[in-house]
Length: 302
Image (cartoon, rainbow, N blue to C red):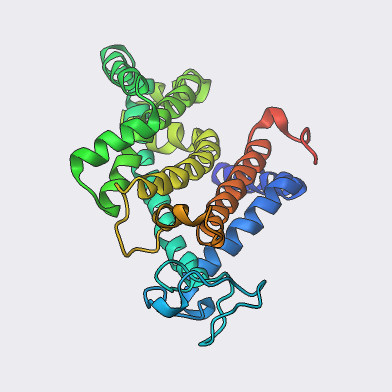
């Protein structure tokens, strides 16, 4: 019976969270927009009308369907870039890379943050002091600058960018996890686990970490938006993805010189793709915050 009651309470709490999230219009809008972006990028072979790497120099910097000056060898919805490649196809395939970098970087930051944050918050004392002083040192550097230093040390490449961004944002995740653990470990049910002889690993994995997930989920969603933005920034600066990758930041960097020469679309649409992704994740994060934070239950209605 106690097990069934616990499962019923967990199910009821989950259902209530979903109900609160569905009432948040901005959160739902962000979720739908993000799902559309992810789906179109994952299903790029179905939506992309051209090979994203196939250049056609005679058709370079041609406008899209809004202009009468369209290429003769097919429809280019958003125009072509400086190499005559279809911009729409490159944005779809490039989204796989940019979004993928963000998700992998978040996973790295989450893994480091959970291990160090749980250890610092739960054990305290010397372990907490050592971890948090190291975190403070990393916070002394601007995030993008620190990512550039790490990526420059590791070398250029998309895999190096993932590691650099993940390490850069791990201190923030450490603090988020630690703050939740500090509050939870003082609760009565944790003291009861100590009283019955439960080990530290069991308490951490079965009780402390599950009850710390709400702020981690919310902050992780918002961090993903920033990670995607930084992935594009590293590509823009030439440290992340390398030519001829269709990654959004690299595509934007390669086309920025044409903004003032009339071919505005070559840099504008990759920038819009980054903007849409970041906005959708920020809206989703705000919606999750309102749904998961008990103090905001029923409070935020848009």
